[in-house]
Image: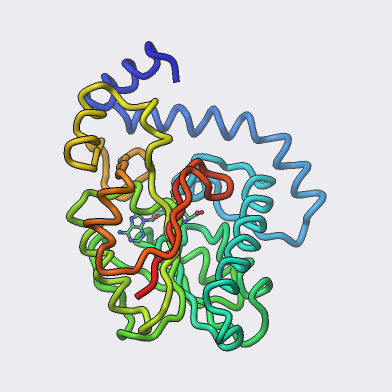
Length: 269
Ligand SMILES: C[S@@+](CC[C@H](N)C(=O)[O-])C[C@H]1O[C@@H](n2cnc3c(N)ncnc32)[C@H](O)[C@@H]1O
């Protein structure tokens, strides 16, 4: 991002005007996606798409080609990882997505993981969960609050995953959710998650880089926590030694998660 734009964005955030600028961005995207979305709908009449505002709320793109293509690609990527790390029990897996939004990825998981897989998705956005429950078959959906707990008993999932959720939470809330995911995973279960890391340094201001280096965490607030404009960035060292330390780190890939420039973590309970 160029320096002028970055400074303008910072001023907009600090003045509390981000909501207004997001509304403008939403309408601009809706207009830009209008014809491509019409073409998508005529090519895929059976494919259910969420309300545009829910897609924008989750990942800024009310763009159905992106929703379908990135969702399918990410689900296939997750299935490969899951098979790699849970190969001893490929059937009958219980899988949870925390922060599933309007089902971009989770809707494809029963298909790619195969019959016998039990898939659940949770989100704190009740509108997304209402839409998912009415439109996406083969997945159980539930709501949670900004803070844990999940309405689920402990030790019940083989796999939990979250895509771009820690990236929008304060550190105390991240900490509480790491404990909660640990609670609902079975012993030996895996947690696949994404974070903003080193690759975001070029977008940070000098004072933020200093904070990243000294404390391991940078948070940009002045926006509703959990929403995409609430931004959090974590150093891998801080995550491995602090936030994720109750887990064994099986894999960390820098800026490598599909369709995002986020870090990917595979953790074992
Ligand atoms: C950037 S979006 C990603 C959505 C989805 N994971 C995807 O990749 O398409 C972040 C999602 O996390 C959800 N979220 C934020 N904080 C949450 C929390 N504390 N608990 C559950 N979901 C949360 C938001 O409502 C949103 O759907």
